[in-house]
Amino acid sequence: MNKLEFLQELKDRFQKKEISKQEILDIINIKESVIYKLSLNTVLYILGVIIVLIGVIVFLNRVWVDLPSFFRIFITLGLGMGLTLNAVLLQKKNKGIISIIFYFIGGVMNFIGSLVLIYELNKNFFAQDKELLIPVIVFLMISLFYIIINYSMKQAVLTFFSLFNASILFLLTYLFVLEDNNTLIQDTIFMVFVIIGLIYLLFSKYFENTFNKYLIPLTNVLGTVFVLSGTISKVESGIWQFLYVLISIGFYTLSLYLKSRWILVINTLFLAGFIVYITGKYFASSLGWPLSLIILGFIFIGLGYFSVNLNKKLKV
Image 1 (cartoon, rainbow, N blue to C red):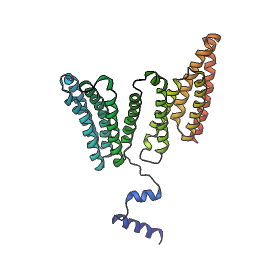
Image 2 (spheres, rainbow, N blue to C red):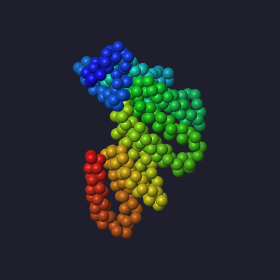
Image 3 (cartoon, one colour):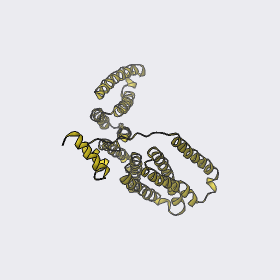
Image 4 (cartoon, rainbow, N blue to C red):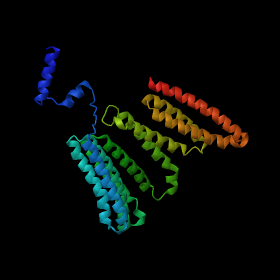
């Protein structure tokens, strides 16, 4: 069988639905890229949805105080759920960009609605000493909602809201478990941020060559910010000052491994802040700020030179 005969055979089998388009793409390991075309109708559709939402927000702002709890929950969380389910139907009809916008607006409304639901339930039904129980339950349900829908629809924006709500759930669960021990919370809260950040960075690697690849810059940014903000909050301790230098070196290495300029830039900014802190703590009083600033200037020049050269390696 020559090349033309093979292609004709493949075409015939595809037309008879003996083989799907996705199976062909999987065999040759090429991920289908989707290009969304914005027609005039689509633009007007999007503008119409935005205008309606603005009108709803303005109207609610005027009557919110007078609304009963049920209507507050229904208008926010109910609207968010409705928009999300409508986006599912639009995606099934191949309305790509419109479904993404509906997913995003629905996700924002679901988050706002979750906060409203938590407030109303805690205010009307639960004692103040159990106020963290309801947030944990609500965000558990919201997280499961997005994970289940995303398992079926496989949409990057759904993955984002799954991670977002799961991160909040993790933080709330931690606070709920240690609710009666404020001292322990203050001493260990940085670990929550570090763990969340590491999970985001792991997902950045996992998302390669998947429908979630568009989230990689975002997960790199959030992961780096979470880990570095968690660790830099402990640099008052001498051992953590040493550890932070090692962590910063690790992130420079990670930026090369993941080929991420975002990690490089954010790590450089955090390191610059760390150097300013160390200079002010150990050298400003003895050397004086004028001399310290001169030294800082040369350090930043060196740091900039190092970052530029590292960035060139990322382009290779």
